[in-house]
Picture 1 (cartoon, one colour):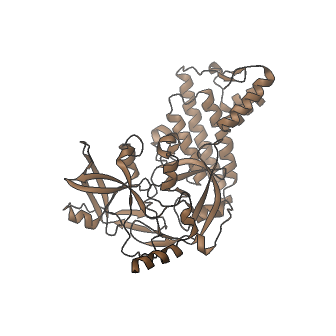
Picture 2 (cartoon, helix red, strand yellow):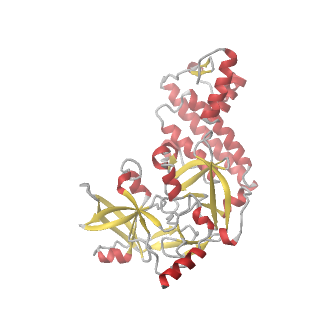
Picture 3 (tube, one colour):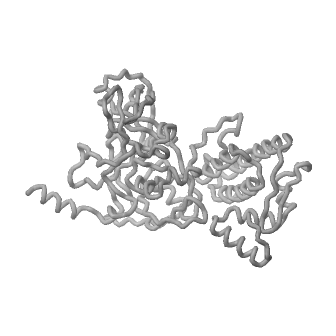
Length: 428
């Protein structure tokens, strides 16, 4: 009788946004495996920048603790400290390989074992070996009751996890694809920077959120009908984002959203690591420290330089477009940051030019770029700068920059229109 009454009252307290397509409280992704023959269901959490184990579970396993202090930032902005680390022999279920991994131990942890983004990426658990992962109902914490089962869990741990590049309401941004998050989140600071409209209707916007250490916070609003794109030109996805104060990242993409779009497989090319670049190759992170948008653009710059042909005409067009976008983003920074960011952008461009000079000196040939019946070739012997190429080709080059920054559908439409008027059948 009591359970029936609880069920009825629970339904009364279930707010409408529980039906939101990309918000689903109460479930977790786990991978079954073993530690020294003990079966464990480890939480699979792409939002965790490290592997985590509860101190009680480490004690049960009889593991020797190495006293190392690790400071961890929670989604609330609050920091906690790990009490040490342990090394464990992890073996996925029905697999022979043993992975020796290091886990940070927390005195208070809602899960026995959490596998973080670095380990998940290296073992291809979210891409090639997705069969390792299954969904289970998350046990209610001791502080939760049947009245608070709608509490969202967000296990964002630290700030150095993998990011994904995309567009939020048309603005370039990097988001954390967090398989440990029950809902979509946006930081309060991001909403203020971009003047986003926030609904503060208490029935829908104020939701309790639980973090990895069992602590709680409440969302302060919701951005309804926000538009998300992974690539320009793609159809935008309409989503609701809960606003969280002091969130140390701009955007968190939820577990349900990641599943819906098979993000780690379909958009693997959009995944970037937080810049931590070797100085002898690309120089230190320069502009990315000023804003998330600039961090994204700088990450793309690093990824392009790692490609097999980093100075193809297409890549040069991309760099020209990137410079324009960076210039616009710097203009939007606070007055006190614009000069420093501008100097750092000059240094980034100098490093790019230096790499390009070495590329040309090595005698590497750049394939001419075909566009709508015309061909743009770069005279390597003259060793032009990017600015000289832009000036040399004038309006036609600027058109290329514009086409490159369009989505593929828009490119096809534009090219089709040009070819139909010119009678040419060539395309990009």
